[in-house]
Image (tube, rainbow, N blue to C red; front, side, top):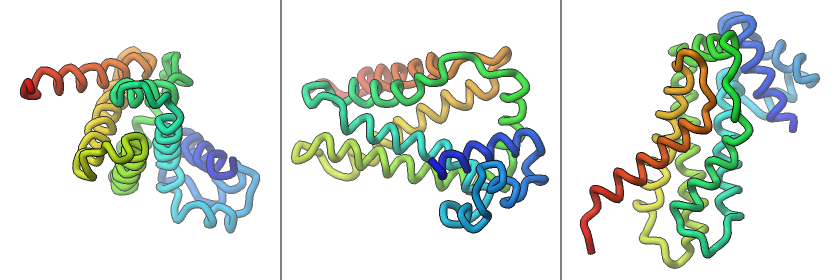
Length: 191
């Protein structure tokens, strides 16, 4: 709960004040913790901002692990991703989305964002491996599939971020995953 509160405070304050005007002390105060407590969770304000995306990936992995074993892998992955994104079913406020664009376009934040994307891929690959168990074709398959899913979600997020007027993210994520599945099905050789 503290980690989530810090991540939410970091993003909200970065949107309100601008990334350059944001201090760790401000984030800690907004989350009602000390700067020392902040440092127990994050090494920088950039890491705190990216924590929201990273926490979402952990929830996707947890959701995938709880899906019924009889469900096809792709259906389970899609359901897990959509279950986590379902909380964002309405279009964002235009001022908020403009603020998110400013924050996420910062070159300084880009490195932390890419690190969070890589961790997201590993988390999803671990959940896929756990789901497949002994039937897993191997780590290259699970890592590749996880990378494709994370990339599709990232593409949908970018479309959401720059949509005019703002739109809900859920249909974009759903469409991205559907297009990925259809593209893979159309390109794979028949047995």
